[in-house]
Image (tube, rainbow, N blue to C red; front, side):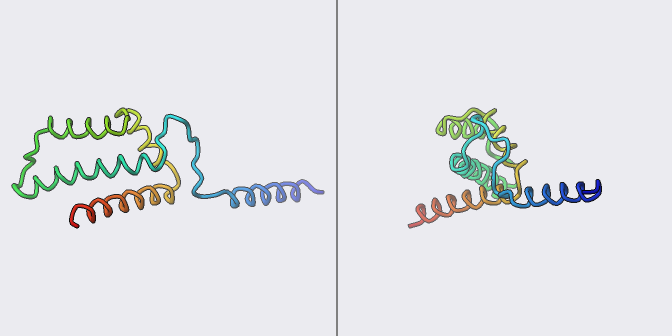
Length: 123
């Protein structure tokens, strides 16, 4: 086999192997990262906190929720999930760095949880 043929064979094999990888597989996952379902629940709470904050801003045209109140809401949400701010941020950055399909899947779960809460609230 010529050198060019060997190189072509290696490139073809490498391309085949990388094409067969699951695009939704998590890369470099470790125990410090929140599992996807836990991350969904926590992100749903984060979006509710931000919605509360934004709603008050829209009603009076300025941020009427004191920063100490927002901080307390975040601390409460993190404590309810048993997660430190550092672990949440590390997990968020981890999911953000993954394949866009994974982040999309994560936010589909967040949207589903928020819709369930909304349906439950307005029964």
